[in-house]
Amino acid sequence: MDDKQFQELKETLVVIAKLLAANFVRDKASQKDQILALSSLRFTNSQVAEFLGTTSDIVRATVNREKGRRKGKQKDRRSANSRTNFL
Image (cartoon, rainbow, N blue to C red; front, side, top):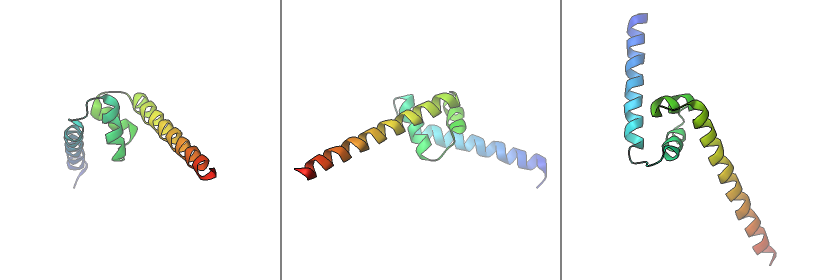
């Protein structure tokens, strides 16, 4: 396979990935839900941004914000459990 064929194959795979991503998130109403869904599939922030037509900064901020919320909920649950166990 020469360089030209490799480049064509790579471009085709990018198109396929975009189509699969669009299909995967089509029922997600908000951009946040779309970002989190694609991130859960281990796409990079840049890839998610490209698929959704946004910036990687927005994707990064959305993912980080959600991680912070999840950590906060876990702390709250642990605190509630420790208080319950104490009683």
